[in-house]
Image (cartoon, rainbow, N blue to C red; front, top):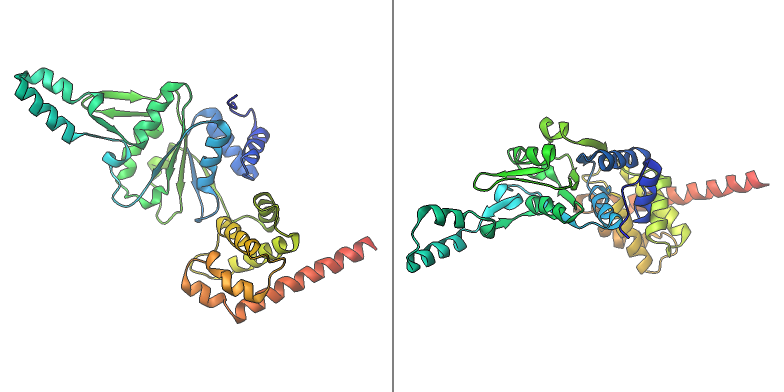
Length: 314
């Protein structure tokens, strides 16, 4: 049985948790309102904090298809919504001429029909809704697209429709669950923001990050998980070119677990930093003495916490 829309914020948080996503209060409320009121949701935050994962999890737990539009520089309407299949149209013209069917009106009707339309993600999402349930439409990394492209989105975001001059207006029978993400490499235009609900996803707190690691890697030793979280939290306070997101924390924990580490050791940290940090300048800054300092700091705090816990229980 396909799950329905959750009835409140608590149910929304539980629904996301069933898909392996631990959402905070603000995100759970934003997702609930977007589902309940059928409005697009714009998620902003640093890369790797879990914005794209929200759409993937929603598609999985709601039992809906995921339609993804990956944005990039130079993206235009023909790659995002639709374009005409010009080669097929040309073949049809030649076939009609060869058969003696030269009526301009009938030829034009044939050429500009749905049979010759190449449907891209935006149009696919609108048409899938005709089957009974709107899909989850993910418009990913909108900030990577050029600003003029955002104008193409306004009709979709406001009315869940696309106007094709030759065919007319195609409307969604049921609005797709629409999630937009941005890493904020540039500002998304106000016209797009006004048509969306908004939520900023920040780096997780240490407690939340530990919960996520336990959920994603239950087989990881508890001491290793605690040390990874403390180490990553310390790194994020440094002025790096790119601080690691929760996705990188999970990758690092997977790598260390695969190496059968039960606790953080300097050699393992130095050899696996490439799974946590993605720029050589950042890796060079952390490797060696700085990693040793951070590791000693992490272990010292763990010892202090253990001593305090013993004192409290005594």
